[in-house]
Image 1 (cartoon, rainbow, N blue to C red):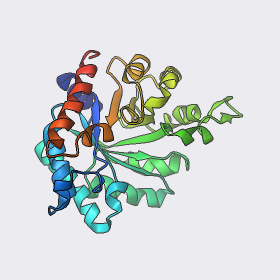
Image 2 (image 1 turned 180 degrees about the vertical axis):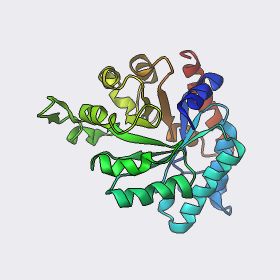
Image 3 (image 1 turned 90 degrees about the horizontal axis):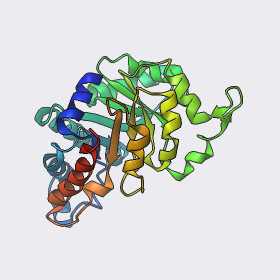
Image 4 (image 1 turned 120 degrees about the vertical axis):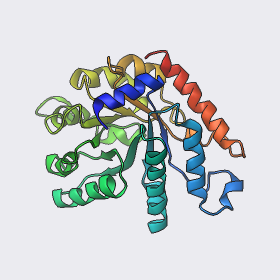
Length: 271
């Protein structure tokens, strides 16, 4: 998916919402747990209920890899269902990979060829040669961790670079832009750090930002939009638990749609 195709979807749907399919079988409605293929059935219902309200689904691969080959199969079938049924949707494999070049090549093939995802989240800690193999795939995106929403982000991300005299997350943003472009690279920037979005936009004014932390983690959507939005929107705001676990009853899909609709309507005010 190209930059222009992504921005067109945002304009058409008046949304920049990503729904996180971080599906935990212990949290899905009890009536589904007893059924065959419960996780896929749950995912399919959520997708069918929300596809017109979001531009992306983000699947955290850990929630599938925990079940071994069966989980990987569910992950693959979920992505294939999205691609076959709603081909305009941007699919993110939230895998947070990052390793030496030949290993990264295999990770890239697994996600871009094996799963047919549009994008993958990566850790930039090992530098350029750990990221470049992913950038060799045309029409695919890398999404680099820059400023994350978790409490432990302060352990490293705010350490000052002695050479540039700026925090590490800013150095990541600045250096990584020499590896890719706004056409194939995004950055993860947590909604709980919305006050830093001005600094982020000063360094990366055109790149898309994948913004987790809205909803259960307490991120402020209005502040994210105020400080992070660009002329092309430039944001993909993710909500996972707040949408997919809106109800533990048989109305789970309808309640998920209500939560997604609320966010979509808020976003529409700014598009």
